Length: 404
Image 1 (cartoon, helix red, strand yellow):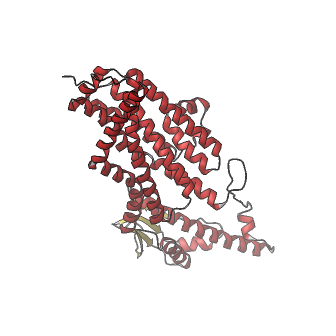
Image 2 (cartoon, helix red, strand yellow):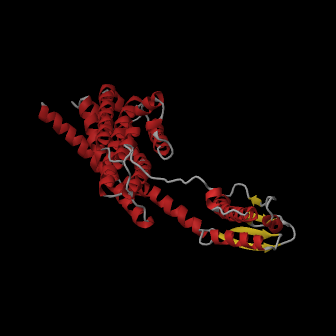
Image 3 (tube, helix red, strand yellow):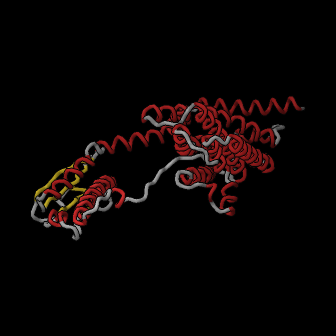
């Protein structure tokens, strides 16, 4: 009996695996999806370099201080991708047409800069809704900060000379010295490699999402296809039991996990090579592949359960989208949120979502906490088994039959 049950499971798993491997469109979708995130990063960087956004420095004052400021802004923006600086000599201090950002130096700027008690005023004109304007503003702000520090030093030196005392302007203006050091969660000093691994972990955790969707669709389609093609009726009249059906579908779905995991690893390596992204060493990528495969298995488990409970191709597609949408929310959140620092109640709710453990396992390994990584991996595996057990209970032969 046991041998026959295993034979039935193997036959169903082999059928699903062959269907997936023969489905070139699904395989192509997995490959394309895996490379979407790396491609997005390369595309954004490339397009940013291709834009020709103009930053204007409008000089309505021609004193030495104004010329110095214009030079600092020009130097700060030199080499900035997609930004071009033009210096305009004009009597009206308004933003010229076509500039995403304009820095206007009003009349009297140099006179005020040479005084001891007058403020110097800069007018900034920024085009709304322009990402290039936001980027340019960051560069310009850095240049203005340097000019302000230089002007402050000059004023301190002049005041000290008038008072007949010797002071260090840097100490007067910046008495606080900040010494920054990156540390591990245990408080030990973090090496540059460890810091790079921690940053890479967040990127890799987010990248998992891009291979989940096609894999989940493949599993959902394998069940709904049984109904639509009529093979479900044949399966319904066989001695196939619930656990055999679910096991066969789950094992067949691991083919999707293997394919997606391998492709995802190649995509991560390709992205690192193309962009010089550091920190994703062989160990971290191996963990990423394992967690990706487990995430796909748990997605397959949930999808099997859901498609058994809710019949119909459209319903299966909607359920798959809901599951992968939940995964998207988790993986996107880890880019900006430290889940471990959240209140206990919120954290407990997030721990009920399998994909939280996917992200935390990758992050924990990157930070050197192998025990925590194994624990999150174990939880992910337990949740997968729980979903499969629920699917076994939900299985009924009539649910494989197409309904009119």
